Every structure is written in structure tokens, then in C-alpha cells.
Image (cartoon, rainbow, N blue to C red; front, side, top):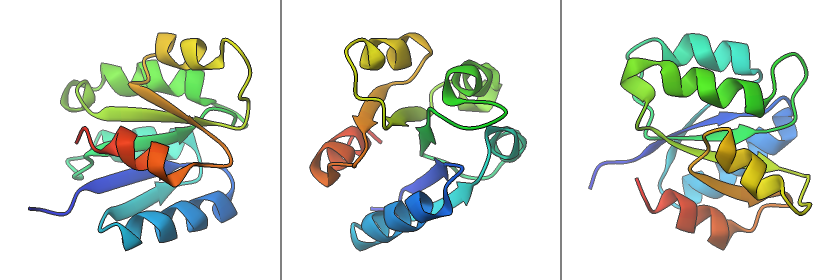
Length: 121
């Protein structure tokens, strides 16, 4: 089985650090971007990305704006996108899915839920 590669997009490097550590233990390969703009540039290259974890609340461009743009990149339209948000309020999950996310996990991240979301890749 080949190692699956996860792109983590989060403006907080501590969140990236925690996610990378958690996913490495579970044999995922991780790359990260601190902004949606940086991620969009990376996703337009032929970099291997099997899944994307995107923080929905970021300065400049948030996940709600970025997800539809990611889905418009021809080579990325089928890439699994998991929305990550600290806003675990009613309607948030629906809002993330409407923006084009394939799944949703809230912070603090429940590792089992995250791994279940990533089991689709």
C-alpha cells in the first residue's frame, strides 16, 4: 500500500504541527501551507496530494472561498477535501459541505473522526 499524502492548509503552525504529528504516526505523508493562496499555487502543480485538510477560518481567503477554487482545478476536482473548523455550531457542517468539502471535522480534532474521513482515500 502506498503512503497517502495529505495537504494541511491552516494559518496556525501549531495546528499544522499537531496534525502532521498525528498523521505521521498513522503512516500518512504530510505537506502544509499557511494560506489558501499558497495552497492553490501548490495544487496547480503536479504535486501528489491524496487529500486536503483545510481550516475554514483563515485571514485573506478562508476555506469557504478556497474549496470551490480548488475544485475548479481540473486535476483536483476529485481530491478529498476535509473541512476543519473550530466553529462547531449548528449548520456549520452543512455550510462546509455546501462549499464543496467532502467531509468535516471540528477542533479540537477527534483523531478517530479524522481517520474515518481520510479512510476514503
